[in-house]
Length: 74
Length: 74
Image (cartoon, rainbow over all chains, first blue to last red; front, side):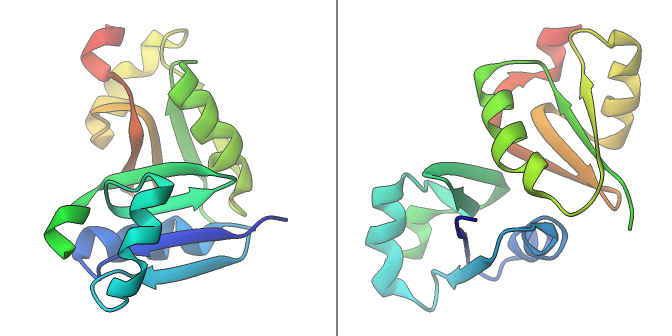
């Protein structure tokens, strides 16, 4: 089973998506706090993440509601 | 485990979210095609669904990317 990556920034919208959606996946989920792991902003951007929270699975980006634009985390 | 409801309209964005995210949940997922089950538009609206695809879990609405506004399905 492929891994999922959940990008977030600790915001309330992010926490809600994390606890309700990301934690309910059968797939193992790596959680990346882009406010803390700024070194991974470029990776998220390259994958097509425009805002957080976002879930990347099987090469597809799923923006879940809207917490913050990626540009606000730079 | 509570049930999840996945509202969609058969659009490409919906199908991608359905197959990658909704089908990967541990929770049982009821799938509702709002273009076909128009009788459930009011229910979706009442729950806070603004666009499809959307996943409703534990009383929270998660809009996943953007396929179509609910108003376009009426």
